[in-house]
Image (cartoon, each protein chain N blue to C red):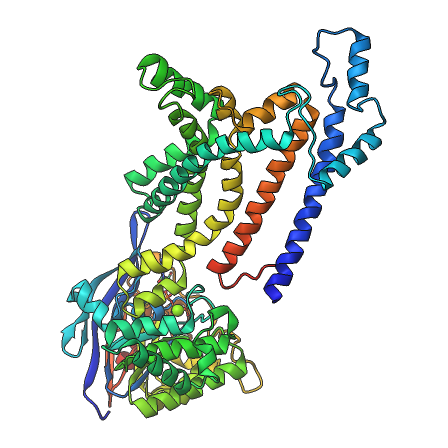
Length: 306
Length: 325
Ligand SMILES: Nc1ncnc2c1ncn2[C@@H]1O[C@H](COP(=O)(O)OP(=O)(O)OP(=O)(O)O)[C@@H](O)[C@H]1O
Ligand SMILES: [Mg+2]
């Protein structure tokens, strides 16, 4: 019962955060110079007409209130530019499906490579393999996504012709997945390594050994479970960010996902689409964090949701 | 002493690797323990109490190495055992409780799971029998509502309660030897007294041997039969409780005794026994390591380490005073 109450409070808090994000985005967006129709090859009169048609000539607070009203009724409006007249909700769902397909695979790569490699590096601290992993993960974290993307393209596509550059061709999703998974994999490697090193020094492992537990149980049951705790916290935001698609990976490889829509929406001042993608991103991140907190509580008996 | 010799430590030497140099921590100590006997190990911080007792279960931290000596338990040298043999002894014939009960239990497993692990490894009980045994153990160490506690996690228990759980865990397989490394230092005074009382009762009831490590000579006089006094990785004096408390011969023991806190002072106050500090273990010379702090120091003390003098009746001391005067 207590749990449900606390959860409810968290949900209310989440809705409030979302409201704040909507508000900030709305006003910031209107501060960007230009408007959705700036690039139309039309006379100033026609542009003014268009602005009036979409209500963009009204004072900003009027627009804001109108947008909120729509939102409460589940209406995010239609796209002004990119897919003229199409409902934002439908654009977002469709492009998110694309991002998700890519994201889930990248996420699996990150989790199933990052955590075991981090463990190995931690358990063999100071050995050659650890040094190798540390250099690799440092590079993976510090090199920006577009550099990785460009390098991969140059080597795998241009040089050796192994993979197509375009997303639509068979095998086209491999490079976007690598680019998307690179940072989270390396981050998970470092997080897991640090975490397991921390745990290996804990007194309770000595207690386990003093009971006659085998090294296998000490490491793979007790040390590992304890070192996964901080990783669970990171998995929420990680999932959200990977699922929503890297802006870079999608733009570079021309993947019709949410990330690319977000970037082009901003470039084109497609106001409703900017709002739509932002709200979706924010909601997803907030939701994943919530899921993570609940998960965290299940894994770690010490944590009570608050 | 009534029983047979259970444990015999001979000439144990331990050093820790510090960068490229080996720093000695234990410099050839020998002592023995009889069945049903309670042996106290006392000494200042850093004197090597924990290191020497950890050797008995081969639980030294990674950088530590046993460079010499033997540890004979029931006729077999523990230091020569295979990994499998030593894990069969740990928690079964010999078990340990540690200083800090706050950090010595795994936070992610329930009390019942953690006690059950040892039982599962060392006994042939099935899961129902194991649960019964756990409840029995929790009762034995004075934990109320064992049915509820068995499902609780470490963070739900107080410090004293956790140490009781540690004791229950250590006793789960009826060990012949319990090593208690400062089991009360991290607890507050009234709880300390309760835990000591509990260990005393359990020792009488189960008739096991105990090695009891402590800073606190008051506790030693309470529960130990014999006492070993350690200083700078060596045993400077050993003997029965009576020898140490009423006929001590070593100036260091004397200093320790003078610094027993009176009843009004808290027992948790760390003893600052004697003027000066123990020597830097990296810079040990040929002299008696206590010489620079000793008010009886003679020329000889600065030149050579004193030999062990047997004062009879199991009382031994390492001091030139005994040899020369
Ligand atoms: N992990 C370690 N690495 C390096 N040196 C160590 C390590 N553990 C202990 N030592 C050294 O071994 C010596 C003995 O330490 P030990 O922990 O046995 O002291 P102690 O008598 O138990 O002290 P305390 O009363 O503080 O517990 C000390 O000089 C210490 O510096
Ligand atoms: Mg110690």
